[in-house]
Image 1 (cartoon, rainbow over the protein chains, first blue to last red):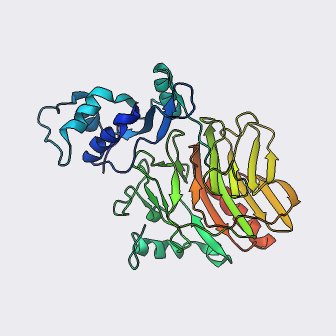
Image 2 (cartoon, each protein chain N blue to C red; image 1 turned 90 degrees about the vertical axis):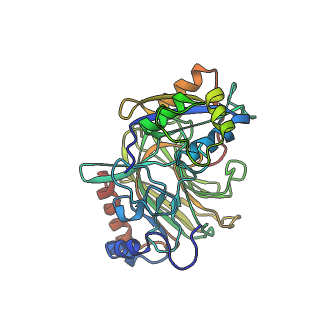
Image 3 (cartoon, helix red, strand yellow; image 1 turned 120 degrees about the horizontal axis):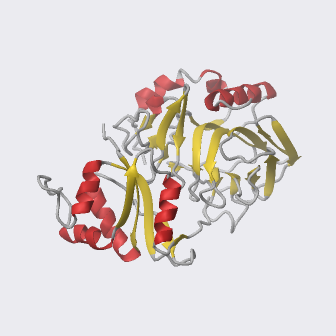
Length: 124
Length: 257
């Protein structure tokens, strides 16, 4: 069983979110994990894409080491060097131990600190 | 999408169907979800890794057996299975968590929806709890059957909208943190909603858009909420059956029948 030790919030510029997502999926995640559109005024067009999830200590250690990997960690199959470089250069991520963070508050504080707002969805 | 023939968790689904009790006897069921039945929950989209308490849930099987299984569109969008005091629920983070059914349901002129949930915060202005609506339902309100949501500007009210017909219940206190057991029906001649024993009625209407759409939990507006369970039928249950459903919802949520 995977043990998610941390709650994380993250975002990246639109032009680099796909690369960051590919990198995350090379570590075993799946799907389009950057799904929350963001912009300075909270209106279209989105300039950044973000999300929130639980994560493992090992994943966080890997992200912190990007574009390298922590000592002893094997290079994941399917992880492109340029995608991992995009993580190093463009991913913004905050984390807190599970139970110590309110996910919506963590996310809203993170984006506010970078001058961003959620773009209101017109879908239900 | 699931392939034909074997589907993930099908054996578990058959076993859990036997535990549905009176819900299995309801006529016209088109979808049914119960997070307290752990045999229907999986961490992965393929349905190979069972989910336990504290795990993220990527797939929740439809207990109706009709294949309207709920999936989170990504790993980050997975709600967490939580449990306390004998209750079980999926908890969405209010940022990106949401679940979408595999297959759409054709809009019907006769609809009954029942669910139990708790809104945890107004992380967005209009958190959607459960919806059967086309994309952009605010642009085309005819495509709501129903859209169940709240409004941070009116925090005591619960909105259930069929087409352009709103059913609004004011519980008199903020809905945040309150377990809500909701059942509601809509026909061409009448509409009805019960929230924790508070009822409203209104005239019915004829829906103009009946194209199939997928059910969604937590919505694309990404509500921060608990989901205890839901059932959807296209036959209005009898009054006695509705009472049983409300008791089932109350037992799921610890709320009021």
